[in-house]
Image (cartoon, rainbow, N blue to C red; front, side, top):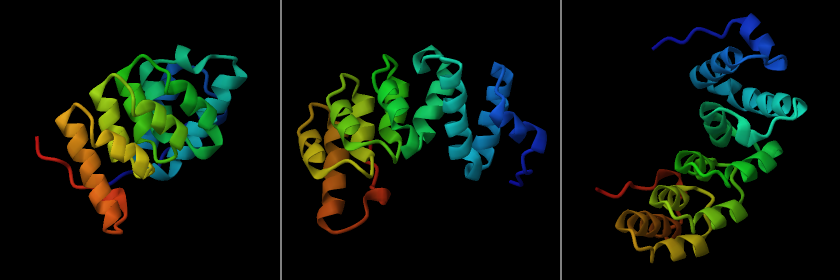
Amino acid sequence: MFLLPPKIEYLSKINNIKSTKDVAILISIANGNPKYKSEICDRMIFNYSIASLSINSLRWGVQFFIARNCTKSNLEELKKLSNSKDCDIKSAVANNKNCPIEILEKLSDDRHWEVRYVVAKNINSPIYILQKLSNDTDTYIRDAAKAALAWRVRGHQPSAYPTPAP
């Protein structure tokens, strides 16, 4: 698949997001061009904070995009999104490679199995969290945590965890 570079006029909107259409266009550009993801995400957070909007008041798609692509410079926003009532938003936070350990620790106790599963699959989940999740009541979570622990014990990078069979 051939991706066209984003149009300059759309990228210039990064500093002047005024409508949900602008947000949709920028998310589309970011999803099609990974090199723009973090810049667009950071700028979106900046613009919404300047407008004094709470991150929890944003549309689901924007929250999800920020949760997945938030950089280390915006971890406060990630922390706010980790308190969402939405399982998909919390899973996106847990899936973020920049997610701090304290958030992963909190999400490892989440009532939704999907969130705990993603914590078990996160490359930054420390061994003590994986050990706790290896005793989870849910089979998928236990298997994912055990697989992650096995890879760590062998000295492998956990980025290529095998996915447990359903």
